[in-house]
Image (cartoon, rainbow, N blue to C red):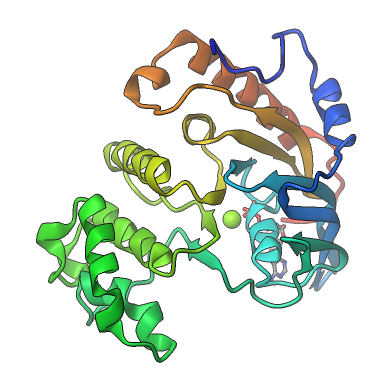
Length: 290
Ligand SMILES: Nc1ncnc2c1ncn2[C@@H]1O[C@H](COP(=O)(O)OP(=O)(O)O)[C@@H](O)[C@H]1O
Ligand SMILES: [Mg+2]
């Protein structure tokens, strides 16, 4: 297949992209289904509608990025999908089951790797096992295999402060995979890293995903990162947070550096940047959100 088939032509407008979002149909193969999701927070000035009428579905094995400017509700949406927050309106279903408590078969990675400073890399990866009263010995080989894949074999005995930022985040990813989760939820996991580390992490993550092929929901405000990693990108608008475009990214896998310097890749990034900028300015009303 040649290229990304997102907005089929450059001329296609944001309005058309939005229209296509509102025609979502749910199929039996959908793993995650968000229906008319809304979330309001109480604030001193009154309720803040962080998300409004968010609806989409994600198929098993899909890598979907949620892309949007800061404050548009990406993290809130991720927490709702993972069952870590309750929606004010609408519902989330995973595998047909209503999510009203934390979804158990999830691996979650946040921007801050939150490693235990007194545990070495291996023991940090094994922490979810220990915390739930299981025997770490049974999971040791899996932990070692994940750390090897992450290029951390020589670092398994190092404590977090002896690891670079990128290495710490790779440990956090291995920890998220220790229980072979059905879905990986990631909230800007690489955004605290410098550019070189971030590129390396993206490549590592692409390789990891090619091997483990999890359903992944990846929050980012980086257009390039979303384009490199995803099968699909949900673009969010602000105030209230909502999905304004649902873009398919058809670049063949495995993907790597050569893709990120190609004309097709950069054209897609440009189109996405236009959507995000448009999203930022759209529908602002005073006193809502921050
Ligand atoms: N716990 C909360 N209480 C009050 N307001 C919140 C809370 N969490 C998020 N918000 C508000 O909801 C909006 C979306 O926040 P968030 O989901 O963190 O956005 P993003 O991750 O895209 O930066 C923002 O206006 C934020 O201030
Ligand atoms: Mg956030």
